[in-house]
Image 1 (cartoon, one colour):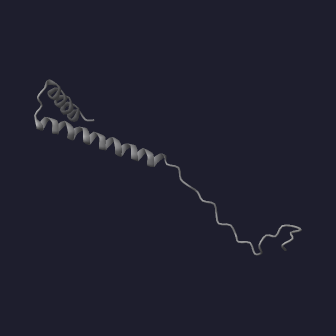
Image 2 (tube, rainbow, N blue to C red):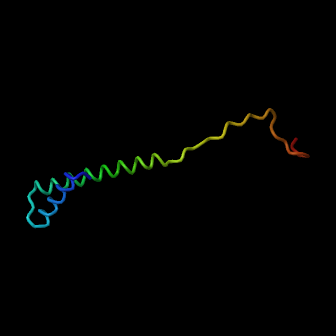
Amino acid sequence: MSADESTALTLAAMRITAGNPTAEEVAAIAVLLTARLRLLHEHEQQEQQDTRASVHRLPPRAPRMTPYTAPRSWAS
């Protein structure tokens, strides 16, 4: 958070806690908090993408020429 955002957030919070905030003051703090939450969410998504494991598939098997028949099988 930059110094300007921090100062604006502090001033808006002090005005709201003092009582009877105007609609503009409530909207200003809502916009600031929403922007911070969006940045936090984007940062968390970026970290998840960086740490996500990759999946390696096995190479396909060569098909068998003849089907498997068990030794001494009665069905052979």
